[in-house]
Structures are given as C-alpha cells and as structure tokens.
Length: 612
Image (cartoon, rainbow, N blue to C red; front, side, top):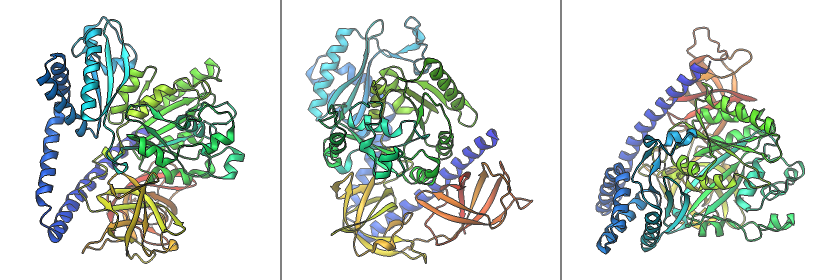
C-alpha cells in the first residue's frame, strides 16, 4: 500500500507540474496579446524587466562566490573595495526578496550538522575560509555599516567560538510598502488538546502560558470556543518580524490579567507597518467534528508549510495522523513541534519522540527527521527543508519558554510564499480564488482569498464567477486590504481582501474565482476526469457514489459517473481514472489541480487530468 501511495504521489506531481507548465505558457501568450492590444508604450519597460530576470538567474548560480567576494573586499580595508562590496551586497539582497543569510567563517557540512555528529577535528566536515575571532568581529562591523548604507539592518542569528569560530548574519531590507512585505503562510494542525492555540498565543503575544490556558484565550473567535477551549473555526494569527529580526510583540506581554491579554493585541495594521516579514498562521481545528473546516483551510489557504503540533504526553494520536496524511497528499513540507515538554515524564517523552521519528521515516512519509537543538541548526534548516525532504522537529514548552527561541529563529527565516514562482507566477492573467465572503456595512461585499496568478490593482474591471448557471458577472475592485492595511496592488501568492462594486453578498460563495476581463470568456466545468487512488473505504465505490470533493478553494459534493476499472467497482488501494460530476453547480477548476475527496474521513486523493 505504501509503495503504491508513493508512486502515485510522484505521478500526481508530474501531471500537476506538466499541466501547470502548459497553462503558464498559454497564459503568458494570452497576456502578451492583451497588452499589445491595449498599449505599445510599456514595451521597453517589459524588456528591461525580462533582461533583469535573465541577469538574476545568471547571478544566482554564484551566490557562494558573491559571498566570498564581499568578505574578501571588506577584509582588504580599502575604501574603493568597500563600495564595490556594497554594490554586490545590494544585488544579493534585491535578488533574494530583500533578505539574505550571510555566513562568515568555516561552515560545517549540513548532513553532519543535522545528524548531530559534528567533529571539530575532522577536516572533511568543514568548508569555507577559516577566520579568527578578531577578523570575524571586524567583518561584522564592516557588514553592518555596509548594509546600513544600503538602508537595511543586520542581526546576528548565531555565533560559535572555539576551534572553528563562525557567525551567521541576517541582512534585511525593510519593504518599501505594506503591499510588498513578504509573507509566509503556515497552517497549524494536530490532535485535540495538543496545544495548537496555546503555542500560537505564546508566539504572537510574547507572554508565556500559565499551564491553565491563559495564552490561548486571546485567539478564540467564538464564545463557545472560550468555554470549551476548543477551536472550531479557521483562526488567523500573524507574527511580524522587524528588520532587525526580532519579533514584534505587544507592550503588555507581562500582564497577568486575562482581560488585558485579550484586549491588548497589537493591531494587524501596526504589525504590518513595522514588519519586514510576516508569518501568517492558519490555526486549524483539531477535533474530528471539524475535519471539513480543517481540510478546507489546508486546501484553500495554500500554506507553504504545515506545522504539526504533537503533545509530548499523548503522542501522535487521533486526528494528527489524518492531518499528516493530508499534508503529505498535498505535498506541503511538514514541521513537527513537540509541546508540553515541561510536564511530561522523560520516559513518556522518549516514547513520543521514537514514535514520531518512526512515522516520519515510514515509506508513506519518507522524511529525514532533524532535531533542532541549537540556533545553528534552526538557521541552516529553515531555507531548504522543503526540497530536501527534511522534517525539522522542535521540542518546546509554552510554560517555561524552552525551545521557543529556536522556533522563532526558524519562522523568521522561512522563504516567503510569494517567492515560490513555480506555484505563483506574476506573468499570467489574473486569477484570484475566493476563500471567504463578508458583507461590510457602508462598504458592500468583500471577498478574501489568494491571488493564484497575475497582478490585481484597485479599479481593475474583473469577472467573478461561476454562478449556479456557470456564468461570470463583471464587477470592479473598489478597494483592497492586505493584513487589514490598505493597499493598491497585489501580486501572485499574496492573500488580500477586495471590496467589489455592485455585487450582492448572496451571489458570491467560497470557491468562486475572479479573472481579468478579456475577450476569451472563462469556462465553468461541470464534469471532469481525474486519476484517483482510494486510500480507505470499507465497502466498494461504484457508479453514482457521492463524496465531498476538496480542490483548491472549491468544495462541493461530486458524483462518480464513469470509471475505467474492469470490475466497475473500486476498493481500498485501487487506482483508476474516474469521471466526476459536480452535483449542484459548475465550478472553475483547471487540469493538474490536486483533489481530495472524503465522506467522513479522507477517502482518496488524485489529480484532474481532463475537463469534459
């Protein structure tokens, strides 16, 4: 079963990537046509941008060379060299979306560092130029002053003394406006009572928990959540990091009064004005009853990593396995946090760790667990853990605050969601998927969602749909907000809410899309074909079987109308090409989108191969 799942997941990835590559090419062509149609004068600018992009890719290859060059130029103590070092530094920063981790001194090999068996005397474990303590301190001052000339800030992430002295520095440029602040979306999942909301409360408010649930009160949205202590909705919390790399927390973090803690959260606007990076946490519900909400949060929120919270006293039980399998099915990188280590007996904690490692190494996951016990590991693993199939494991306590520093360092360095250009391309026609709808007094209908492709500006004419007949209606974006701060443009990968002109609240639902107005009308799909793998079903699936389908921001009941299986029935572990039909109304889906369908618990995963 595990091997079929593994093969199937890699095949899904291939189909997904192939279809999206096709769509990108078509989209870019369509955009060019439209731009030619509307204006010729923006041409020079476009070409300049393309040139820049080309130059960027060439330079990226020699980032390590650039680092060496900067350090060489700075250590020569000649003022002319200082200027050229500044230029290289500025180029590095702009390429990397305004933040860069600079490592000075000899660096340990990553594999040895993550495995935890570094040896100071083995020469093979170390690479890079050895530098003395005095040299390091001199370079730190030089780099700090150079970065300040460019308008950025330098912060020391970590330093080591001893045989191989080394430092890791974070260089950061404050973003020019709120609309350009890089954002990382993290979904937080785990079993009931594993400490999800408490961990988030401690991270975003800065005050430690009292072991009686004080930290989580400020996160709850409903009265029944406060009374039962269980999250039932998709909560959103944000943690901002200042240019200096320190988290932005409210002043009254020390107060003991719960009412004050509830009231005194920093406004989102204040955070986004000060922050040079925002981590948005999607706080999902752990209870089995709320699985559909959790699933929707995972498929529609497009998170760039999933933080799986495991209580050290309970282990990976109940829904947390379900959540882990969903994250793997959607191929989102996973981070594990083991909480409550202050109250768990050592033997129970060891048992939990053993179990987590065993599950992560199992053929279904095949991840390499890395225990983050030092800031150095946190710094090194944050940038590339998704591609390298690594899974960082943090052990934290929200009462004593142990291990929270490493977690904050890690979150501070995660690559931003919109920086993932494979997933979110700016050079595409606009596509915005709606995940929430509100009606705001004196503003009208407001939709919230993620820009999947292209750029959206206030005042843009857009098409919103499909409605129950599959038609799109035209409207105009009146105003936009990002993290409750007003913005005028938003790019692919960003999460924004838009107020729409002359649209009734009851005509909009979750799962609709906004696309740019063009001659080619977008098509709504009623029937589609997909390759699916049945993960678990206690009887057989036949024609006319109905299940709930999650696909991006779309969730609707579908009916199986046809399948290519010889017996005409599907059991657990079977793979087939199945044709589905939406039951109540057509939706906007594209080939290559991943789908999950369930009836109660998750039943199957797959990918859309063809629209019928």
